[in-house]
Image 1: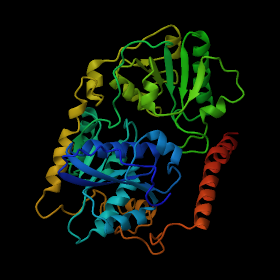
Image 2 (image 1 turned 30 degrees about the vertical axis):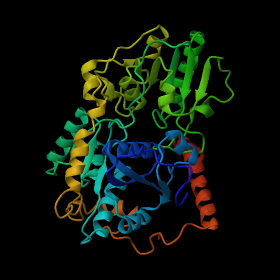
Image 3 (image 1 turned 30 degrees about the horizontal axis):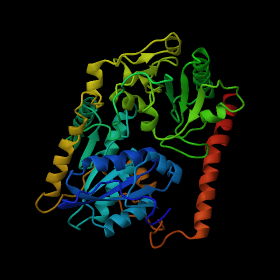
Image 4 (image 1 turned 90 degrees about the horizontal axis):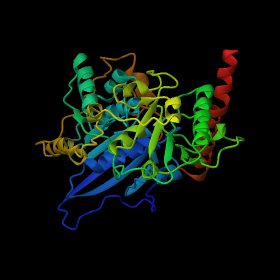
Length: 450
């Protein structure tokens, strides 16, 4: 994928009276992060602004396919696939007002150092924004410190904002960049009562749980729920098709586990936009998917499963106190959860109608930064060759950057679009990698357990 894609027109409605223009770039490394980054850019733009959104997809194992991009439903004025070095070259040549880094923590850190290097002495630079796609339930300190240095580090809730500031202040880092917002993809009509038929949706996750035993257990219980309640429609909402990758690696797709089974007539596997699926949902069930927060925003009854325990590795520990924790046995018996209002209010779900103002503070901060006399100061990440000499160089090297953020000799160049041979080799290499992840790696692990 290179250059401008004609099938991706702008999502931003431009009012006829627009008097301001805003150039925004989003760099993302997966379908979910593209969705978060592009929607965040949309939420951060002033209502009266004419916005141009340029999307950059970081080349890697999770680079989204055209189908995934279409399913996300977020479009841009231009969209192209790049390496980290190619992206930095583009940032050096183009002039943007805002840059949203929708990447894993190491990618954010590398781009911050790279941007600092390419903009050294160059004057004006964009306001750099980063954050998290959803619930932050692991590697809190690691992920936050890798994101430090951006002008705005977005927190999706008051709960997260408090935690983020505590981490930064605890290591002596500037915490002023932490800015409370909400998840950018919340929306849709509030739940208005049961549908006909009553619909139960299980929101699958690529890597939670990660064992065949646990994933098979969850699939068995979902199928059994459909058999126990033939009057209900039971949907297994899948994130990706076999061979596609999302933010997290999926070694055991549910659709493969379901192959060859005799499935009840009221049980179906579905893809598509989560918002459209929630439009017909009466009960959302998950282990710890961000879909739970989308459902709670609409006040759809939501269950976070306890069958496999309430554990940090599953992420469902985040929902303690929510009123949503329950087991399949309880659901089979007709349990209907009631979310705790105070818990929901602290999670950025904004089910009380305040969602439209959730990004006001962030918009105001960006406007002040853009109007700052003399432009913005150089980016100053917490990690430097002095503070983390045994950690930072490795992170930068993965993106072909030296310890000073300058591209290493032999790094991929952006002089031309990849030719047919390079494209074929790249597709073959990516396919081989995915085959290794989905087929070979699990076998090696099982052999190691013998």
